[in-house]
Length: 112
Image (cartoon, rainbow, N blue to C red; front, side, top):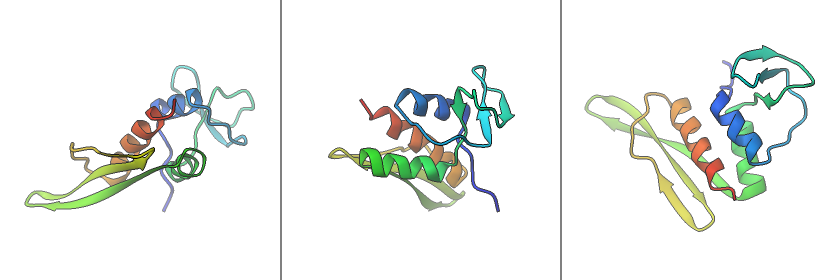
């Protein structure tokens, strides 16, 4: 089992919001191509769980996904708690990782 890495869109948004982390072994180029380690990486690729932890510890924004059983199967939504708000995405995602990724993006947008 391997942890899910954030997408280029999320990495770019995280950098804009001030995410500074130690060098990682993977990164995205300015055009969104995925590469191996380089000390001059513009956008570090980290796991969803590491970004989730950063949002929680540095900005008091809690992001998580919720499974929902429907007649057509299990789908996932996300919720965000933080800064006296509760935000829930009503669009269904097919995997927990998709729901969490969208939630992380929306959580990053709350940072001023």
